[in-house]
Each structure stands twice: as structure tokens, then as C-alpha cells.
Image (cartoon, rainbow, N blue to C red; front, top):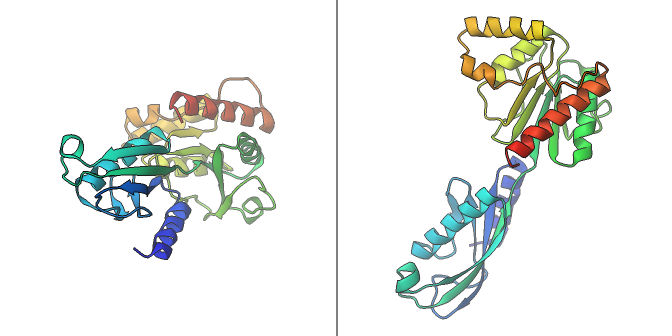
Length: 259
């Protein structure tokens, strides 16, 4: 294993925003499949890159790494490579550090106007999210307008592309410039992986949008997953008050999901 290749791959996965574990074979005693200092990458689905020795030992460590990622905790593990413990005849022992890397939660705000700007600012204060703001207007999609955002994306006028990548840790807020573009975004994101999806609008507007989507074949089950009108019912109408209600709901869902 060329260590430079391993760390280059680690950087690539970090930049991709995916969960993974870097397994370190920290110390060994007696007969073991590989020497101390060996490392491998384990993905959340159990795929591995590089090796700490292969065989039953590596398979057991891989399973433990997947479990550690699901718990979101790095862990030290000690293994005895005997017939009784791992059905191995090596007889040695190994100490392994499973270093779990979990990316930040992703908050994607469609609409960089007054409400979207304050939502981004409030999300930044929590320190819990990587923030992307998407807007079709250059003046509302730049770092000068949104210093709280990690990324700004200028999309085309109908809000159909380009979009960031979505995953199971994505929170999506739809607060674009009008009802038509709100609905265009909703059509594109209703089936993507996500934790939370909320859309701004009055109850009348929401009912009208949902009626159109049902005619287009969107199931009632999917529509029920949308937080609309968006935010907790705190009663405020200013951009700041609306943003507070949105972030309050997002944090509530985050806690309910154990994230």
C-alpha cells in the first residue's frame, strides 16, 4: 500500500461529503494477517479500499466499522485471532482504531431573497449545517449576498438545474421568488433522498399546489412528507420571524431523527 494513494483517496471522499471510516491497524502481537500501520477505508455500505490483511479478520473489522458509522462514533477494538473468537489459527492479537468521518448535515435553500438569506444566517449560527443557496438571479446568488453560505449556485430561470447533490442528510427549504418556481423545485426534489422538505406559502397556495401535483401523479403519501406551510406556527410575518419558524422546525426534525 502506498500511503500517499490512501490519503489522496481519503481527501477525495472527504470532499465528496460521504460518510466513511479510516481503519488503522494500530498494534499487533504474535501472528497476524498484516503489520501494524496498515490502513483501509470502509464505506457505509461495507465496501472497502486498501487492506489490513484480508480474510476473516478484515471482514470482522469491516462489520464493526459499519456499525461504528451507524452509531456515529469512532472506536478502539481489540481482536484475538484464535479459532474460538474469529475462527482463525493465527493466534495473535490486534488493536484497531476505527476512525469515523461523518459529513455535516446539508441545508439547501432554494431562494436567495430576504427569507433565504436570514435562514442561511441562522443555520450558520447553529454550527450544524453545510449551507447551499440556490437562486436564478445573479444578484441573489453570490457570496457577497450570502456570506453565511458555504456554496451559492446560480440556476436557470425555471429552477430545474443545476442543483447540488442530495443525500439522506439533506434538509431542503423552498422559498423562491414565486409560486411557479416553488412548484418547479418541488417537482424536482420530492423524490430525492432527504431528511426534511419544506415549502413556503399560505394554506390556500399549498392546497392549490398539492392539487396540481396530485393530478400529475404525485402520491398523497409523498405530499404528506412535505412541511407546508413551512415552519412552526409562531405567527410572525417578517423575513426574520419566518426564518426563525423555519429553523425551529428544522431543528425539531433534526432532534426527532437523532441527527
